[in-house]
Amino acid sequence: MKLSLEVNKTLHELDVPPNTLLVDLLRVNLALTGTHVGCDTSQCGACTVLLNNRAVKSCSVLAAQIEDCKITTIEGIGTADDLHPMQVAFRECHALQCGFCTPGMIMQAIDLVENTPNLDKRGIREGLEGNICRCTGYHNIVRAVASVAGAVD
Amino acid sequence: MQLFNYHKPTSLDEASSLYRMAEDPIYLGGGMTLIPTMKQRLASPTDVIDLSGIDQMRGVVVSRKSVSIGALTCHNEIANNAEIQSTLPVLSSLAKLIGDNQVRNRGTLGGSIANSDPAADYPASVVALGATIYTQDRTISGDVFFQALFETALEPGEIITRVEFQVPTRAVYQKFPNPASRYAVVGVLVADFAGEIRVGVTGAGPCAFRARDMEAVLNRALDPDGLQELGLSEVEFNSDLHASGEYRAHLLHVLVRRAIVELVALD
Ligand SMILES: Cc1cc2nc3c(=O)[nH]c(=O)nc-3n(C[C@H](O)[C@H](O)[C@H](O)COP(=O)(O)OP(=O)(O)OC[C@H]3O[C@@H](n4cnc5c(N)ncnc54)[C@H](O)[C@@H]3O)c2cc1C
Ligand code: FES
Ligand code: FES
Image 1: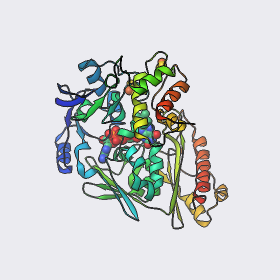
Image 2: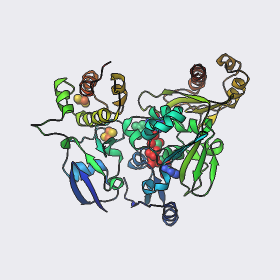
Image 3: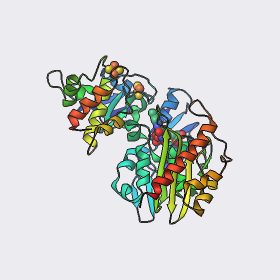
Image 4: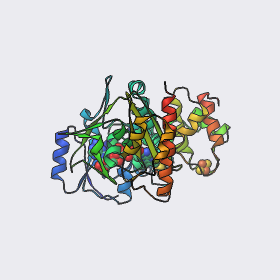
């Protein structure tokens, strides 16, 4: 089926089978491999991207469902020379080790900070519920998000 | 996932006729249950009919007595809608406890109720808040909507368009979440309608139900100690790797007690 959608501010016209998942469209058709597949069963959040500025698990969304929508992936928020403030905060707070969960964590954190009034540390912990990290113990991730949100305990 | 035909109708009539014409059709709401199920090949429909283009299934209408919510409304919209927060705060706080942020951004009220997962949250509110389920051509009382494990009063092809909840004087939702999935091991919604208490329960049995034995006791006196006179209820409790039936039966009492304490403190 023919689809048009905007990914990282670029309009794409694609022709894909109706059972294509958004994550496969990103990774295979558009070669945007920064979005990771951890569990492929909607649990881990590694595949999180922004759909019209809201975090979703791209392994659980059909490409067909999002005709004419706006997608932002980790590749769309900053460049190596000009990182997004959330990426800077993750680096400074040592909020990653292997880095596998990081793209999903960052996209989720951006949704949280942009769409939650009065975000505090508890709100950040609850807000990251859908993202699993096997390495960091979460503490530094929460610290990084809190520093961007200006959140206190 | 097996290949299927994808349709995105813009009216209820179009959706119904697509459903009638297809060999093995299924409706798609937010996809948070259906898409993982199809990926596991536990469902392999020939035709997926995406309801998200039907504008009639959107929108929130709030009055003093009731709150009517379009079936396509996602969990985060219900959690964050200012009118629902002020008129029916218990529903916003329940929605906020569902799964995680990503699931709440996609999953819909209609999809959750149509699915009748024994551990889903909204079903407790449907039975406790005297809800009415609207479909293309009839209304169904919340009291008879959930029939068994993953079974509802919906006929094949029937679409939930809206759900109308009655506004109680005060109400509390208490849930013991599974620590991994956040689904309810047991969840209870206790509502007070001008002195008449209703207790909706999810997670405990094959589908959501009203704990009428508890309601009878609490309608005599709104005192959780009164519940001690009840044995464990006659409902058959779920038993799985998360909790035994006996554990759930006990948890139900604990949660109703907590809900009453919180309810009484509300004013
Ligand atoms: C990681 C994870 C955690 C979760 N945790 C929770 C939780 O804590 N509590 C909770 O309650 N739920 C939880 N859920 C489930 C979530 O709330 C789903 O959104 C919900 O169960 C289904 O809604 P949906 O819109 O995604 O429906 P879909 O997945 O699209 O559809 C589900 C079923 O309903 C049917 N359907 C959909 N819409 C309609 C309609 N309008 N009329 C008739 N039939 C329809 C479909 O045909 C399908 O059979 C979780 C899900 C995930 C993936
Ligand atoms: S890969 Fe999508 S949630 Fe794990
Ligand atoms: S940094 Fe390794 S999984 Fe999170």
